[in-house]
Image 1 (cartoon, rainbow, N blue to C red):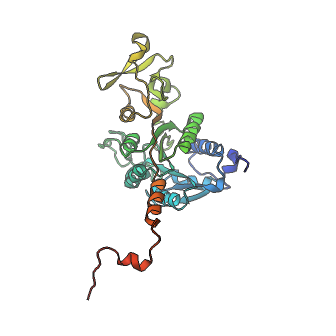
Image 2 (image 1 turned 90 degrees about the vertical axis):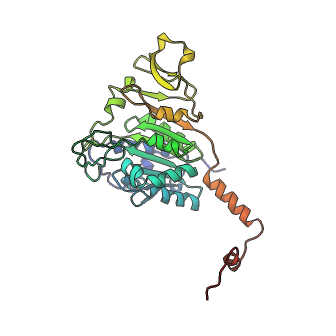
Image 3 (image 1 turned 90 degrees about the horizontal axis):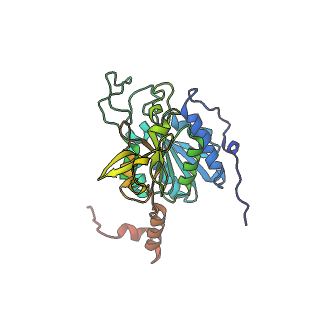
Length: 333
């Protein structure tokens, strides 16, 4: 029997100098991801980190694993190919809100609906950082940026709603500087069989400084965010004195002391529409949700593909000529 793989975070640190802007949230994410991956019991030669384009896309260089810095928006496609070619790999897809939600949006939704067994980490700083401060698909309406000097007129994309709508079987949200929380989320995503999607709220200190401070900052997170736990009532506040109740189909904040416990919304990761409801929570009326919104089991794409190949080969493998000649054929003269 093989001894379990034991790694430390330093084992996953490459020899490359980490180059992000001082104070960038990517540093904290890198540390947490390295810590989480070190505890998975997976040999680092069986890990592969695949990215697209953007600040977040430098991630593979800083991981002492296999990696691929691919092209803009195409990391999900490259990752799908890697997993299909070697299903035993632990595959990690890294991208920013611009890379994943804009040019890569179509690749992402099809990865999610197929349920390939890998993990997507979306770094969301709500800005194009590498290209110096243009508004991204997740930038809030009315926000002034270098490409929207009078304020963006676009409604912001919600990554969690997109992932849930595409049928992702594991959907969650964490924060760059919530080290223990982020590590736990990454470990849970790895344990899940299917496509796991984690939105990580990340600070761009240069072009969108403190963008998430109003909801998950140190001074605001207790009152303005709620970390949901399966089977537990949705309660928040510095004194755990606020909860969520459904008034018909409308969620509302109530004082826990003023209602019966049975009235409080209880989180269920497997409930079909509850994840979408939670994904839409936002200020000023509702707290932003972190934690695992959805976690359900569904056959993975690899299993379905292998089964189909086995079925096709059950009667023997035909010759190439037979394959070319099957079905409708035409002779061109």
